[in-house]
Image (cartoon, rainbow over the protein chains, first blue to last red):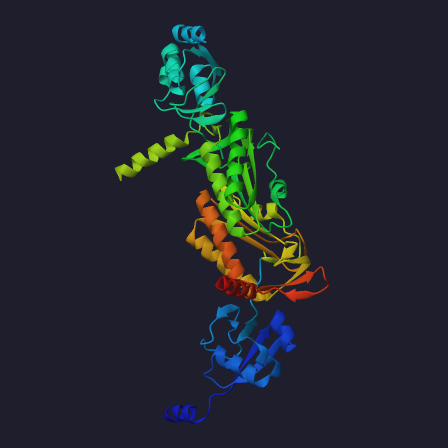
Length: 96
Length: 96
Length: 148
Length: 148
């Protein structure tokens, strides 16, 4: 037990992978429909978006406030992400 | 002119005739769908209904407050009637 | 087009009466004949009306709604025998903005029930029949409420 | 039954999904594609969605309405190409009492527009096309309101 706890604290937690789906106007802007992001935990939806803004040049044109989803439900930038999550960047909704 | 005015004041105004339509439950109660009423002017919708209550025995069973119409529009008992008017006694409405 | 009809109500036709390229929102209300009323099993209804006044009153209600909101309104009400599950009344209101359509549709539905001279006779499963009197139901409900 | 469909919306079928002998009042809303938007002539629309989430979000909205009011609710939303005058969205709510049907229908319609991830591209008469952004329209309106 002591050894296990020690090793968990000492070695960095493994990175987590999330898939980010991109739709409509944003898919056009980024010229892609999904982005795989690997990030160190603990990470939030906002952290994932910040990493996309930093790594994809076209993403700098995304609006400062983004509607986003996590696992097919509306999410807030402060929500924590888990390995395997499906995130999404949603342009302004226009259903109806 | 004098003569005419004099004769108008002196002789009683001619009686007026109205037709009273009766519907649904009230038509069953009174065993008829219309009642012709002749009454001395000036008379109101309420006067006509009072005359019906007084002259038709079954009409005593009509509720004390009645929904009524004059010339195909909702009317109040205090509305004045004119010769040739079409009145109606309306049981509680149940459309829809 | 008359508001009262002996024919089955056709909701798409009612919608078509008010739809137009500049009116993007259509609210409708459909009243269906229920199989129960106040705890008794109902087999069918028979609607009757003071036809001439009912037509005029529907026209007045439509005109009121169309002057109060920027809408087009249609009404259809059945007369005669109507079976369980069939529509007895239909209202459609179309507007450029959905809030106007919703509000006008509701107004017309409420006013129609309150003002249009239509009556219905219920035929019960036990073989009896009776005129429907919503005011008697309201009186009973208020007496029962006072008892509690 | 999925909420999103490539097929034309069938209002009677939507009504049939919620009708039942004990539910006498059915309120519906139908959104039709208009030929103009913000002063420009529109020829047609093309709807796309985050399909999996849109289905789940519609399901959540229906569940919310059905827990808040004693109603049954149905939703249908078009995907793909939709022509002027065609319905892009339909909502139906059935209840024993019409006020519940009206309120639930309106709630579902508003929440659907606010929460379901669907987008539309407008094709204009001048040959151009653009994604519809209701928040941009709202921003413009509020700027114009401030100017007055």
